[in-house]
Image (cartoon, rainbow, N blue to C red; front, side):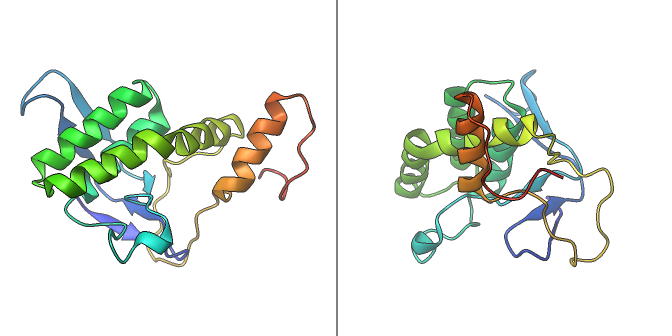
Length: 166
């Protein structure tokens, strides 16, 4: 996988397509992450980075998982199962694998709904033009601001949290 960082220090851009064959290599169930997709690898909260950094042996599986959560053509449970399978293929330690898997099963709904809200606002996580230099920053809103806007919008309240969408 070939990626480049953005200037925000959290976001990376895929510079070549990246894929995964679900079930077995060469299966008909293929996942292809397109060039230009923005990822943060594993969305592990900063206080836990000393135990599990954002990237490690599970990085490839995390990118596939980020794509599945953005694309949402599979259920959240199926997407999480692909993450677990991808970590096994990457030979991630069994304890680490299940800690990450359980964390996404418990808390992944936050990212799932954030992605829905981002798409509803017209945000594109697949960049058409890939920056040559790492001076560009992701235009994605903060997770909690975006979730609050989404929840308030669904309840009929006019959200006024954060700057207006671009």
